[in-house]
Length: 198
Image (cartoon, rainbow, N blue to C red; front, side):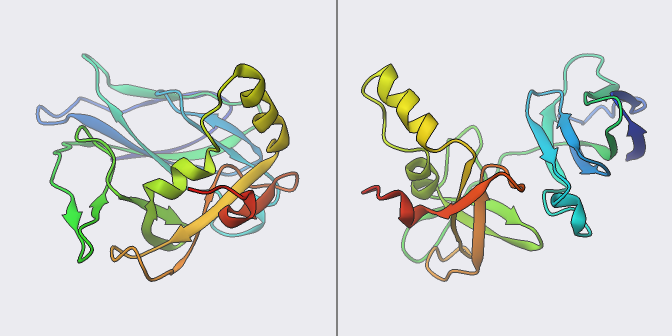
């Protein structure tokens, strides 16, 4: 495991790759306002509001990145003044079967098998599952034209959606999960307020 703190874009040397490693697990904590880009194209953003709590309310962000031949470093790209801490560890990822609850719903993580009914999710210190159907619904109706897609995007810009967070039973609500970013200019609305029948 390697832990490093940097300001601005930085490349972290990971040392030699173990023979059994299949992926790289990355956990990034922002130490300042900024947007931090992972090697797989995903990113996390931290605002001043996120940094007002310890740990930051929008982190740490975790990603698992497949290893390529000869990969022994990882680069996080960000602005020149943005500070961050990264924990990186080689892992051997093995796909396991999803669990099945009493209602026959599958639960676990998205993998080569597809998407389970209940997707593992963390919101702050609370771990649980979100319904795949809620995630799909929050994305809005399937547009029938480019104009409709643009209208939906315009109506819902600067808006994130909160959906229920469950244990594996898919029934008991233990919290909420925010789909999208948080920050002072972001409105967070419940899924039910979107008026969608899904």
